[in-house]
Length: 123
Image 1: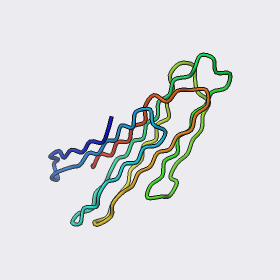
Image 2: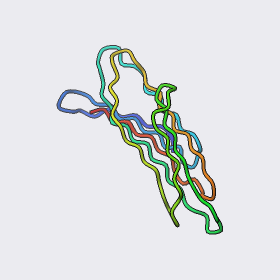
Image 3: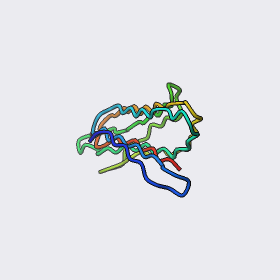
Image 4: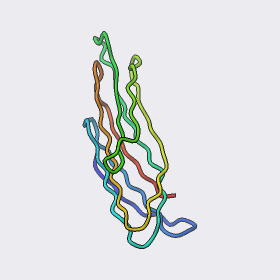
């Protein structure tokens, strides 16, 4: 668990990758600092996995994703037997000088949180 940052060499120069594994926490926040000189394009992936409790009569899980304080996506679904997940993937362009704050919040009933992972890969 934790935050990881790496830079890989791409055809157009160095490319960034930011990952935050929040484990079974209910909230995850990934802050990507600004780059003063260049525009960046990120593919962002938010994944929330749960496990339904055997004794749960009603079970659901919810994921809300905010970008720079504004709600971008929200979904609540009934949880399947066993393991289940919610995934949200999107692209975002960051102009020079702009940082990014990605926030994922979760809510559950009748399930256990298994993992909450945020991933940002520069394209």
